Image (cartoon, rainbow, N blue to C red; front, side):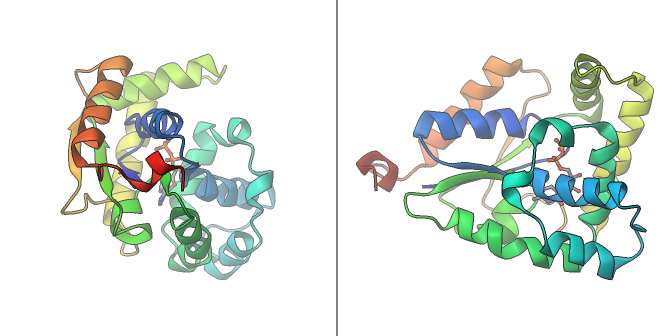
Length: 216
Ligand code: CDP
């Protein structure tokens, strides 16, 4: 079973994807980490964000095993990620790896922006997880404070709005809901309620007696 989870920044898609993967015993790929890793490399190596050829070279040399989620979750890296993610050649370099991950025997859970539309258009289950920008900003603000980063709620909201705009407006694989994706708006739901709602949607859609149940 392939589960595709998309949605904007801080919508909670990562938490839902991780829990679904554990629940159905499927491998999970947080595709945002790939773009974050390229963004972090570009920052570290002072690559100009307008130099698309140099950014594509960084993406081509990406080592998935060397991506440490903890160091990649900072606000600055998120901003860099959304800039490199708008470059078509960067996306092209990361395409094969993601498609192969989705196509592995037994299935997988992937979360990102273009999973249901580009990476795994034939996924068995597609969820589009969203919430108002204000609700997402409040969550991201809490996360950043817990990480010890300094940020005001207003600045986080401005960052989220800017990223939503950039991710949705770009020509290459923009953030849009696949026609056949179920929407889960979790603005008024806590983490547990959001998880239950996601699980209900997957249970309703998943192929019964699917491959994952036979351990194939
Ligand atoms: O957790 P958050 O939504 O803030 O970030 P993320 O999911 O780690 O993604 C970081 C950035 O990578 C996003 O703003 C997108 O621009 C980009 N991205 C993308 O373009 N396509 C994906 N499949 C995943 C992430």
